Image 1 (cartoon, rainbow, N blue to C red):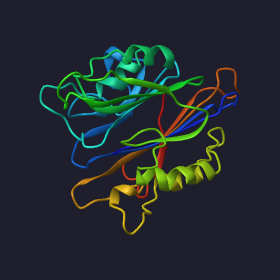
Image 2 (cartoon, rainbow, N blue to C red):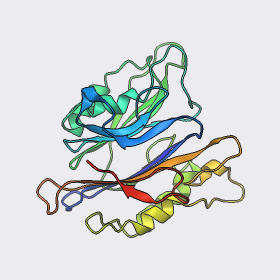
Image 3 (tube, one colour):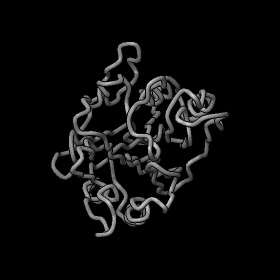
Image 4 (cartoon, rainbow, N blue to C red):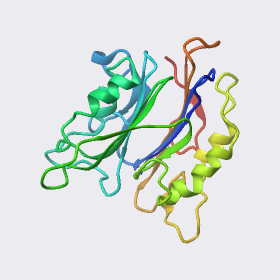
Length: 256
């Protein structure tokens, strides 16, 4: 159950801010974001060494893409494609709208269920496959919705779905926190939230932002991404990455 927080600010010098924690079995090997794919030289993304795909990446055109498992669909399934392919396919496009349109037409029987976020400086979309190849019979197509301006949150359920204990607890905190300032490198309040292991005593460990469990599943890395408007000064893309749990590891800048 990964977590992605997205702030959209149309007209702002930094119209897109993303914070994300990746939750996975801690023994599954991966590499930090880099240009890992010779046939996709414009893509910078983390590499899942098991399946060859990614959980989060960006491209040189200013598109960001991330995939999250939906509930009860952790791990691969024989006969189905890896969901880590999907961000890479989205990053083959030069803008979020064309990427979302293309990915909306994938076969729902080819993948386990997922949430796929695709965004650029102007638009942002959530693509949801609710059932996927685990289900039997005729499957509904991928759902596409535009993510509105403001602060939103995605986990293993629907956008801003307060039935998720994590969204219920942390979405108001992100909304109330001081917005990051990528130009000055001030991400303090969002970094603190990404590192938080706070949860209600009655809630499972997965209700925290930063997950630690006795089963070997937990938060394995953390990202903060800021995308500047094309006409802003300074312009560009900022990605700070913690190569491990964000309460134990420093965020470092990814070089493009």
